[in-house]
Length: 324
Ligand SMILES: [Fe+2]
Image (cartoon, rainbow, N blue to C red; front, side, top):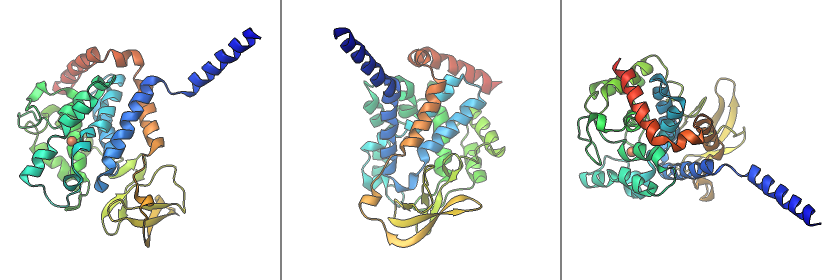
């Protein structure tokens, strides 16, 4: 009888173990979910984290970084704005340009993110993307005013991708720029706001159309849709079906999804407003799981834990590639 009990307990423990995500996945998953909720406070940034993560992956791959590094930098792109949790709604959602005082507060978000991550077992993986993505090669960035190569590679990559997405996305006070306009601004800021060789590589990717499938999208193959009142704020999720309702996070407008021949699901306004319950933020868990699974399949635990070495190596690799 005792041996049966031991056998049952062992079996039960194995089943429980098999159904639980590995601890590193669970730890990273909680960070991605947190980042999602932080982003959802700003109704105009639907899909921003996903796009920055994809742009960072495309640029890192073009630099021929090791696959584990590509995965880590892409995760950093997803998590870079974690610190915006500490920025008041009145500033985050302000429909007009920020005053100097408000901008000073906004500039605290990298440091808040860095402090949030302090003590997290996997902080080293994404800390620099979070802490240093607003640093500039000319030393005029924040929070530390680092210059050129002092800025960790992932932060230089994420900084370019973040700015490109901000420029090509619509804001309450302006429509998103065209790809060409945004690339021209990157070019004009090359060596000042953005790392020059990385910028050159990113602009070449943009001109070749390698970023088009991410621009204006919130998931692979899923473009943002237009709210007639607010612009492209509507995020359709991969798992959604015709007949489901989605809501504009800015004006609360209610939309129903229809199937169309040309572009799959299309959101049509119903003329109604969403209820309080409809407008609550909700993480896209399947998308987060896909982002995480993709990263973890390329980022073995051993390499993950050996991160400081990996980072040093990839900086060398990247500098060699971009300068060649
Ligand atoms: Fe930021």
